[in-house]
Image 1 (cartoon, rainbow, N blue to C red):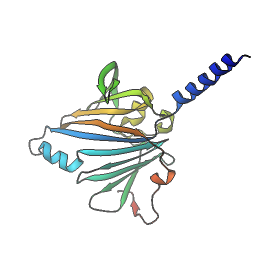
Image 2 (image 1 turned 90 degrees about the horizontal axis):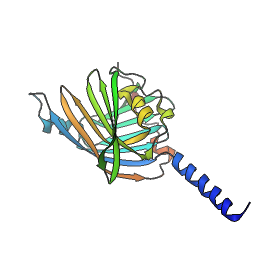
Image 3 (image 1 turned 90 degrees about the vertical axis):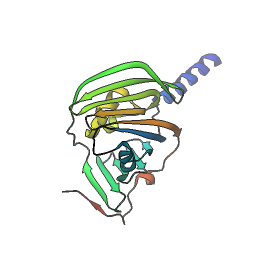
Image 4 (image 1 turned 135 degrees about the vertical axis):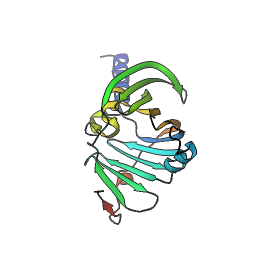
Length: 209
């Protein structure tokens, strides 16, 4: 076998390994709200939910911080399929099983090269559910191993990942109560230690009744 063929095989193996690697790192989203409820303004929604979200993901786990007055932290542990939420008023983590879902997908539609986000051409996946419509914009440059989220029914996250197999760079949620856009302002690959997703032994944990 000559040196050129060896070089070709080496490059092929390297590229295959790279293409199969899943994204690990941080995405910073900006949230924009439009209220459809007369008694609740768009500004009030922004204050409650937050206009900034810092989202970290690694191999079946994710962690999210928001600057709102409601839920300020959300943590998902893939090994147990549990979602933990923390509010601004308490140090307690409230958990529930992520196989819970009350919003069934009725139809889905994929549109190729719908929008450019962070200088990347993104496809759009539109999910119509019982409560409204969610549109995800994504690129295969930031892949996700969807098999690690197969039990994550909550929010139809497993359904989305089974179709897109990538982290979203933009999400539009629209229903009768509000319209919300989460748009990635920055995405950065980084190594996240396992301890980043660990829960301290001193943290109070409970399951809401």
